[in-house]
Length: 271
Image (cartoon, rainbow, N blue to C red; front, side, top):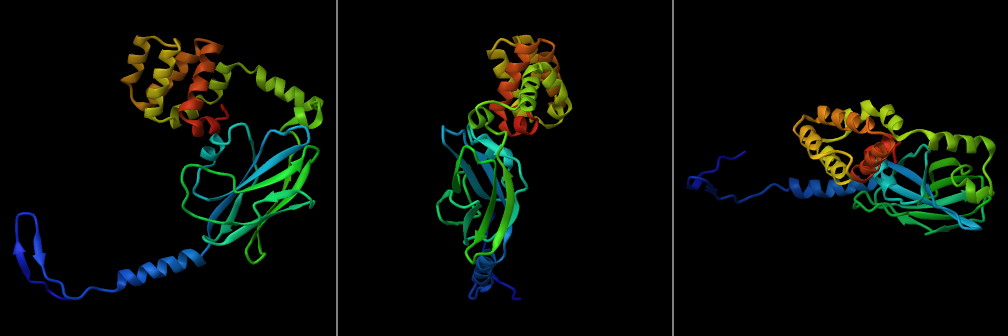
């Protein structure tokens, strides 16, 4: 420790002469880089199945840091179906990883991928596994550059694209689809009413009001009345007002929520 004598004092600054600086910052920067390359971080493996053609379908494998929200990734995958499966694993930044599949014989590209912890908001496919449309189950493995297994799961593919995979739906699956399609939109909103009130943000609610007004679901008076309320009351007013206006109005609200906040709509099973 040393006491510095000021060379100049102004209303906003104090100037002093420092002859020697600590090397701590330089050393710590090297230590951090070393730790980042040696210590694993929490990662996740997300799977998406693209719509098949007559003979093939593609299983997309995404290796991502564990702090990435799944709903954000799902929202970018367009018509690919998310396969819900345990995804947690440990990954090392800068290490190379590869995907392997059993039974063998399926094309996988690329051969390896160097894992990075910093990515932008575009969640691109890491590996593509090309399957045949009659594939019902595969064993997927992720291995590191030393050949050690970091993630392994049995993946069941039946039921994700039944129309083109089997030519016809099993009776039980057809019944489930019909029941889901027959649920009125206002009942779907009622089933998620509490979560909608508690979770939809105030900026998202204001955007929903604009879209509902544009589509003619609410009028100016209803919009102004809701807009001045606090978040919870605003959300309650929006969902209750729209539900009472029937199926079409409820469907418009669901579609608007999917556009304004795809994460919340996915979590509420409205997408």
